[in-house]
Image (cartoon, rainbow, N blue to C red):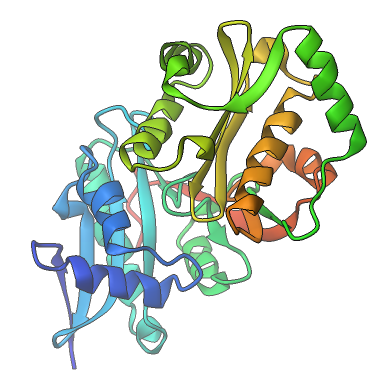
Length: 311
């Protein structure tokens, strides 16, 4: 049966999510996740989401997003994002992925993009999993995409036997004498936390808003403070996924982040979680290894200049 191609339209939501989960099986998404992260993204356009079908069966997709409005996952001007691409295994030999890629890059070029990045950091995935999707990586490399010099990794930790090292407790006591404290968030720190985001990590405010509006427990967030000033932030994102996690520039490399992390992991363990993981650590890998985290996944991010036409 001939393969046909069309753009996403209303009513395709469940069909798309099921297809994504079949193709990118190690990175499943929910319908709620898709609605929140793609359909409600101000930069999303249905013209950037292509479906391949065999009869009425969806067999492949490509999701491209061009930059525009600023936001948590927005790309810089001129750089488009392909958040996901692939086809069911039995259709890969029929050129489905090539046709989908061509349509996705044509969409991005029409939105003044000079470059396309496949699976940008923190957009559903931190990259293409080298172990799970070698066929997609090989296909993209055949199409001229090249891996970036930065290799994201995911790290995880079993919480069954986790205990705070004695030196962490000692550091916490010392910091308390200096007016530094890690504590669970409450709204009395809302203004100070907003100021922290503005100063240090502007995009993180969206993670915080999702946490608060999602009616999650306040102790899913840990902050570090120096007097009335917030100097660090750590949260449980979804399920046993931890992040974002960071400390103000003037306070780094002093062990404050480690204290925040153990506060959060302690509370997760008390709530019945038996595992915790960071979706992307990259250059901070040695730090997490010292905290007992181990390598779970290795990703690759690929990009290509799309100004030139390829045959």
